[in-house]
Image 1: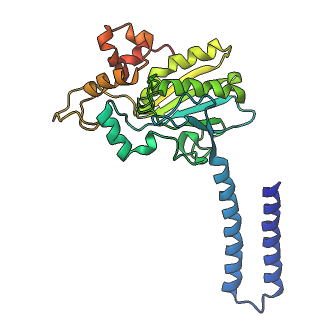
Image 2: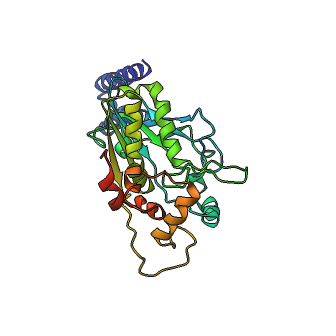
Image 3: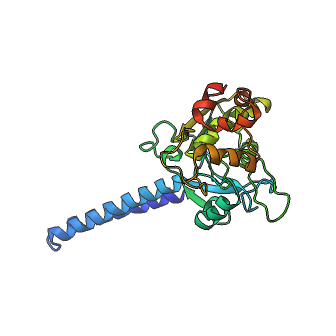
Length: 299
């Protein structure tokens, strides 16, 4: 109703300006008339753009289960924009590397604290790309229900480590994903026709190692939704680096070493179908896309 009123005001302004221009045509210079018309048109465009920006916004919601937290114990959560009447859902996992031991996590806390806590999350976030509600930017999924899950677990969305003492970090990426889906039941997600679990970088890895668990949970909850995954830039390789360096963070440590350490540090949860292909001391290999993908049941 507020927007309709604003549009009427703009239209009245346009008509009023036109009437005045016609009435005082002999009194106002042509360039001044043009300036008034351009100013009115710019106001209308600004109003339309403002409305579009409002549609793009996602609202922050913290998990009700506060035991499932970010690294620092602050509550995990998600951002949501509901699309009433639409039965498609896009759930996006953020990326941002990971840490794999006390030293690398200490360095991460100093440099990338926003990826380890929710204390810095704004109440509202803008949805772009596959979370955009603009049909020009996101022609296929612009009117879907959009959910963004911020990355604050530093474990490639795989951990299930609950801290036993206050000075320990939590690594609960896999738990966060399932708890978000469980909380989305109240928004009607079980009535979905299609659910897309999407992620970039570490979020892309999170898609591949969690997709089957999410699909199984949906069917266990009685949903007939088609659950699919879209992994962007999460297909990492367990190759040896050209110039090996000391293993101090994800940028210097070779992928195999970092993931081996992280898998134990996070209490990593990996797909059973992939783990069955390897001995228990090689389960870490399931973090790599070309190894886990052939074993996935949902794709």
